[in-house]
Length: 491
Ligand code: GLU
Image (cartoon, rainbow, N blue to C red; front, side):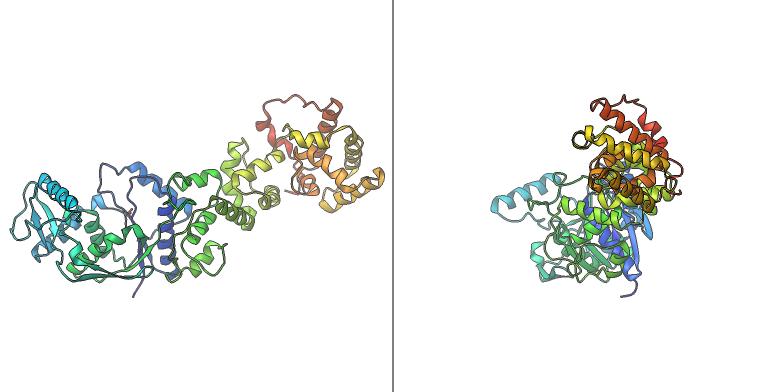
């Protein structure tokens, strides 16, 4: 095969959900892996259900996922002339015919078949009537009546469909719009698509499409029908199991790389490896390793994978992604070595970008509330001499590098006879409000001298007032930047 051409043809009748996103990712990856082309096309002929709002939402979701397309977006609604031409070809070749059977007649036919326990099928009334176009006339495909249509699928293997199972299906409705099976085949032929990866809910459409390829004299594409994604209850994935739209994961602070990685692993494998960078996926993705059994969506696994991607991403790259989450907390995140240090310290302790931003808040905010339990355990009477000793020592210190800080703390240990833990915990709560945080020297180095001393004083005051919070100004979020000294970590 020459250049691989794949496509993603969503119907803009809803948001891009996880299953659809996975299909897009597979097709995109295969095009990128092979140096091929990836085509985006909106199947919007269902004018009642399609909406520009969903087109915009799908484009937004693909862009966020980092899926770029080489061609399109095409819109089926703008290609009616192309379908008309192909329809004409089939009519002229005697492979299609006009049908004027009324909806009532077709409905009666359907009911009778159901009553007999048969599959509803068109009885071929108009097949030999040689009718011409006219109001109320649909166009039907003259399907083969006997023999078999064979689907050779990369994932499913070979499936032979008995042609007697199919009827002369409608390819163009009486009002002139093409049906899905016809439009999709004309599009894929005219766009040069030669590899189709899609959900196996389309397997039953495929023999009809294969018959159309044959009637139009076009070579068949490679088909790969992947099993659907299921929820943990083994039901087909729906809103119940996860977000309705992939962009909800963006809003919750997931990384696009993690979502792409997770979606791929829901239907493709490379040994036992779970974590893949985007570059690795592009390098390794192949049709051979598409899974034969359905992937089960596990939100916790996605979260764990997201944490891994957070850890792996260079802090400088995370900053841009973090900005909206900080903005929500009232913090304008500035790029620079200090921010990078904050991010580097917290990324290994965070599950999402939102989580990281929340945890980093104390660096920017002076008037945070102490976590109740942390304050009860560590900001009590006996911590007073410790905090006072640390404050006194740091007040005389000029070098706020981590190594110098470590030395200063050793001096306080010698002075008070206390172990590092006994000293570090109250200091940690005083500086961050929490009992768990990045390393204490790291925090002090980032905060710098002034902010550190201010926070120690604040905690001392808190203990002296018997554990009562100092008055909160309420303007804390705006004042946050004051929490950082310029000399913090040389930034
Ligand atoms: N518009 C169809 C869908 O969203 C495309 C199916 C196909 O890939 O052929 O399911």
